[in-house]
Amino acid sequence: MEHEFRESGKGGARPGLRAADRHLLLLQAKLTEIGVPPAQGDRLALRRLSELDDGAVDAVVRWLAHAAAGAEAFARLAGREAPSPEAEASAPEPAPDPRLLAW
Image 1 (cartoon, rainbow, N blue to C red):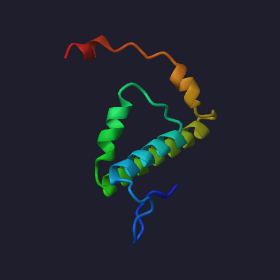
Image 2 (image 1 turned 90 degrees about the horizontal axis):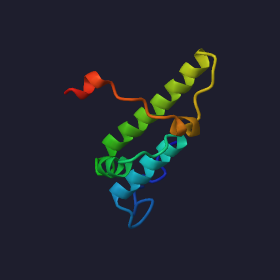
Image 3 (image 1 turned 90 degrees about the vertical axis):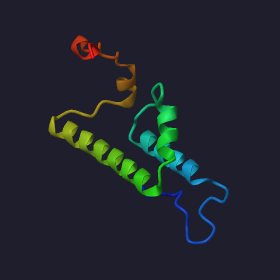
Image 4 (image 1 turned 30 degrees about the vertical axis):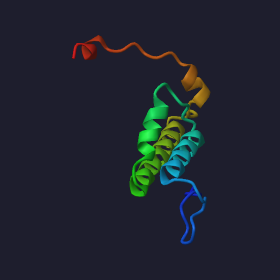
């Protein structure tokens, strides 16, 4: 999916829409497209990422697309389907490793 919100040569694709707002929409659209449900604290992280320049946001979106494609390919190779976002969202959080909590 190429960036529908990218500014064109004259006047931009969406007059009055700040770059950060375009970036936020783009990031949210990519996460939705690849089935990543929002978690606690994601809104702040997305806001901060959206403030980055076009090149940085493009890189993050590209990484998300590659990660999703890699997960699907791995699932096919393993002979099973990738877990649905609903199944992942309803799975209980694993208990943290106590050795890591000692830090």
